[in-house]
Length: 161
Image (cartoon, rainbow, N blue to C red; front, side):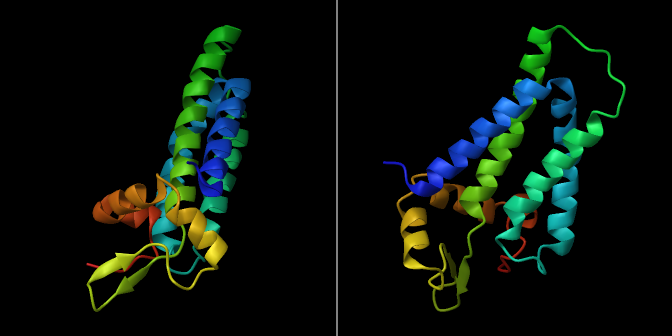
C-alpha cells in the first residue's frame, strides 16, 4: 500500500510530466543544466542547508532553468513532437524530484552498529510512519547511500564511510 510520502512523490512526478508536455523542448533542455547546478550546489552547500531544503532547491532550479531556457531562440517543432520531447524532460525531472522526496528525510549514523538509521529517530512519528510504510523510500535511500556519487549529490548531510 502506498503511503502519503509515495503519493506526494508521485504527484510531483506527474506535475513535472504535465509541465514538460505543456512547455515542450525548452523544458527538456532545462533538465541537464538544472541537474548539474543541483549536484554542484548540494555538494557545496549541502552540509549547511537543512535537509528539508533539498527538494525545494531542486524545484527552484528546475523552474528557474525552464524559465531561462525560454530565452534561448529555438525553432519550434510540431506540437506533437514538442509535447513528446518536453514530456521526456518532464518525466526525467519529475523522477529526480520524486527520488529526492523519497530519500531526503533525516537519517542518522548509529556508531554502535556502524549503520545508517533511516528515518532518524528524532523526526515526528507521523512522518516516520509514512517513510517506514513506503515501499520505495528505504530501498532508494539504501541505493543512494551506497553509491558515492549519489550520496554526494542527494545525501550531502550523510557523513559516514
